Length: 257
Image (cartoon, rainbow, N blue to C red):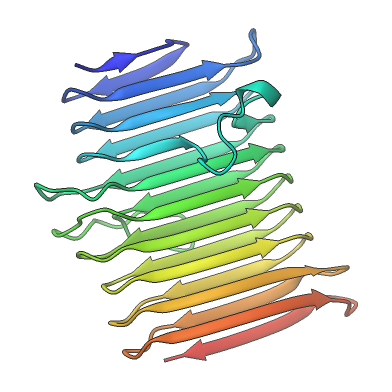
């Protein structure tokens, strides 16, 4: 059966059974909007939140998906919530349309205000945040671990493949960062991104029929405009450690096709 541990002012719709939904409001009396739609079995949503005027929409289609606190740090209920801050906007869609699902995971640890986060696992999400129609073969098995401590950041990420797994670990500790990260097609893809400063504009696209990996660390007094495309049919690896001290910002463009 579906199990709801704590019901707040939520809109919840479930079309199947054996799902676990546990949402804990740490700070009472605040106005937040949470919409959860689950169509499948053995899905889990488990997180806590504080703050006010936060908007969260979660849509799970298929089986074995997870949205909630990160296993790296555990539940954030003791320090204000896994979503702690005001006026944050989160839109998460997960899709598996096969009989055997490998299980998508979206983990978050957010503190700060006015952050916009849009995630599509099993979907192609365009840079403007538009969700395109999914493919007919999506097995799941993707992972995003997001960690945002700053404010006024925008993150748009998508992962889709016909049978291989994509991984995206993103840490954003500054503010006014704009990140778009898209992973698609078969063979494993991985992104390990750390942003320690503010005012960065990052676009990372991984595709093609090969395994690609990117490890990127951005810091410094000024932001960096980074465009990385890995779309080769042979495996590609890219690593960058950038500390920008140039007045007006730095720019890096890399294409591995």
